[in-house]
Length: 145
Length: 82
Image 1 (cartoon, one colour):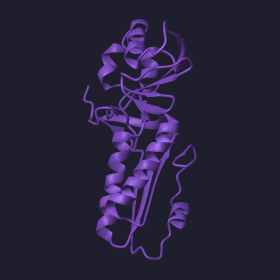
Image 2 (cartoon, chains in turn orange, yellow):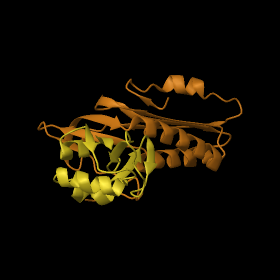
Image 3 (cartoon, helix red, strand yellow):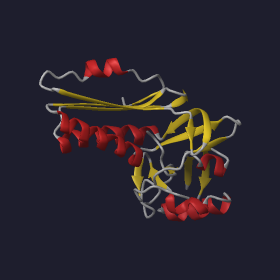
Image 4 (cartoon, chains in turn orange, green):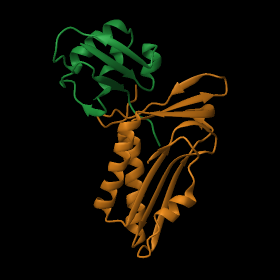
């Protein structure tokens, strides 16, 4: 499972990915911030095309393992309503040395942002809501419109 | 043929629904042909067309993919996970 409606917890992922041959551990967590584009954000809601998002997150893990020759890679994403400070995405990479762990975790989060069908709905201090501009799946680029 | 169309992200508010059943004439209708029909019934959908990706029965496809009776067509706007 890569998607969850429950809070993302780091400790279980650290236990799951333990590897005695790995001397480097890189953790990236995305957290909900209280502002975006000069708007005060009060909370977020993430939704997904769950079957495809699950497949894409598993594919990103496999691809990251192969491309960067790391020992472990887990990519987890939260769905549902999140408060300021909550963890929205968690990436854990273990490798023999540090350089590949940093590079692999960077690759994994960029892939999540560009390729996984998940949508972020922001709620603002004035009560209005708006979906965040994103990346087109079939064009693979950021949409400015 | 009968099609189920799912609207994700901001397309849910553009089209005013999360999921709907649509009847189309003939077999082997493509995603592009279905989109023409959907754009005619949902004002505002057309302006998002070039940035929308498609999935049929949980697989990403192109606009030339064929639909079958009972297919689920998902419209996926630009993504913003992370």
